[in-house]
Length: 329
Ligand SMILES: [Zn+2]
Image (cartoon, rainbow, N blue to C red; front, side, top):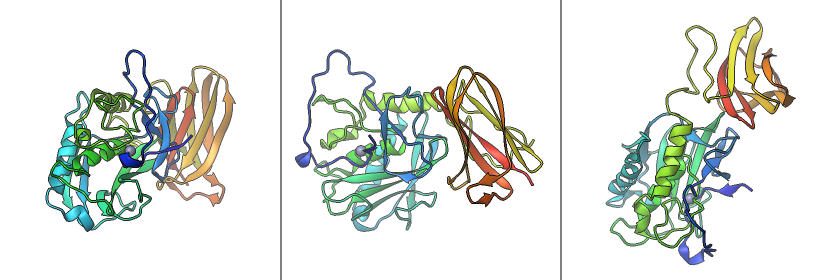
């Protein structure tokens, strides 16, 4: 079931099913999985080692801007956002650095700007406190996130409800690919708990830190930028995850994609344009172990794609990998 990664709900309307968990509650955190290259506020809740992976950042440096419309202009909001960013920045060994880059007129739209804003709507009304939208490129790379606080709620930065910093910390967790934790114990709730529980949400718990380190370890930032431009030697982009490799090289009239399977597996190989629109599915069946070359002549459901840069993604139960594809004339 796809579950929302929207903001914490008002505790007053939350029906909490408190479960007694035996033994360790370690690794109860969950990550956001959505393999559609779209703008979304929903995703599956999956464990760190889920075969299909999860949404993640490709770089460690992530800047945010504040739209000061509505309650975004309240005193203390900027400091609250900076404090929330500092909480995630302090997680180690992960090295993500979230930074405040000033104000913006940008809204809750896909524009390449990570924006925090206050609004009524954007899918967050009623008992919703805040909502995060992720912009996903092929391979579940988060290229942008926007956080919409519910302007119909009275927000504070002085330690009384509803607390900007606590909710900002929660939503920034979503912006890093972290879903709601499955921890349910009433004390020491992680920031990524699904329901609001006051300013205690400002401080990260071990479960939150484990989640970010999971992303950092599985998708080491900077190793394989999805949008790498035209490779200098016009040859293959490296595959990004151990085990599964996907490369591409141009050939007259098209491109050749290459992958290798260590065992018999179900394989799905798809092509996307730079906007993340799916253009073609080249492979969608079970293949035996071995090396494969799949030609692409640019054919899509809507005619031949023009020459240029595209993205390919391969998904198997073993994992996922992607490559830039140069479609030649
Ligand atoms: Zn949430």
